[in-house]
Amino acid sequence: MKFSVASFLRSIRLDDSDPDKQPSYEGKDPRLQEVPCCATCHSRPAAKLLMCCSRCKTAWYCSKECQTADYESSHKSLCVSIARTLKQVQQRTVPLRSTIIDVFLEPQNFFESQVGLFGQFYQAQEYMTARRHLVELYVQAANIVETKSVWEKALSHALELMRLDYRDVIETRYVIPFILLNLNRDDDAFDFIRYWMKIDLNDRSKLFDLMNRHFESREGEWIYPRNQNCRFRDVFEECANVNDRKAPLAFLVALLIIKCRIVATYDATCGSMDLAFGTTSGQRIQEVQSTVKELILDGALVNIQSQRQQVERLLNVIQRRNAIILPAFLNPTPLLAKKWQNAPNEALLVLLHGTGCFVRVPGAKAMLEERFGKEPSYNLG
Ligand SMILES: [Zn+2]
Ligand SMILES: [Zn+2]
Image (cartoon, rainbow, N blue to C red):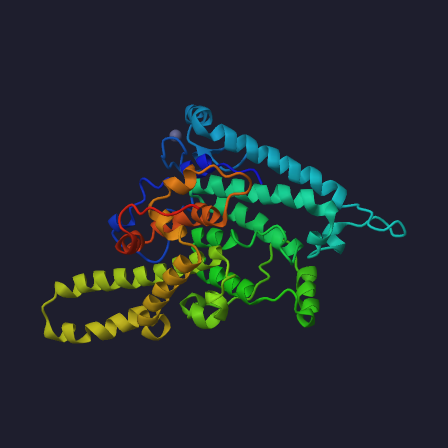
């Protein structure tokens, strides 16, 4: 996979992301926008007045001047890459609609006859690689424009890759939780991770059902279990293998972000309520304060003690598994500066996809600084 650390760094824009200055917090990434703004001057005229880049459809402008300025200074390379990769995907779709896999059979349309099994055919490899690259490009673009529709483009291509290949040989699953978290779909992220933590692809007794679910699904469909409010559940009970040496770091970090968001929401709500009650001197109101808090925060659902413990335990597991990731959230430069020979390592991928979400949770950076100091060093081996 082609990969550029520099462009990713540019897109995450860590500089202006101090969540502790946000007035209130509701567990959601405040930077996600439903309606785009001009990528150059950040003005937000009525949506109709913004022009969308016709080539990549991931950037909006209020005027021709703003478009030209952005194109020359930064948009060009990403725009060209997206257009080129989209074309590649389209081109590589064509042969898959009529592929001969057996000389005695008619040519097959893979998108009808092999849904779920793409990973088993060398004929589908180039198509999947191109589409996987497209996901990364849309993630980069979404980090820049912070617009919902661009995150959704990344998500739809990623989910489609998963649907076409039930084994996910191309490993799209490690990106999906972070895309969902950027879309503030924490329950879906939790469901997705739990599904992949529990699944055993070598369990033949379940294989038929699994393949069937993929085969009978339709494009764009969410094919994983879905439970409302599941994000509050105890990850150490739901996925007993969290402590496993093989538990994917991407999943652990995504779970950490989910739990940190819950704790930060609780603390922010309590904080603003203390403020509200503090201004009222009535004895009666003081008496009902804790009851009101419980009602608003739903104590049974949240169980804040347990949530804090889960954060603590996840931090310990992640640090034990990989001593780079958590310090690198505070001090990414050494990790990013290293020249990677082939594919970048697991810590780097997690850092690139997870940092944006993580650092924007109020208190998350402070929590790490308490553990590791302001600018911790780490051993890159
Ligand atoms: Zn503008
Ligand atoms: Zn463009």
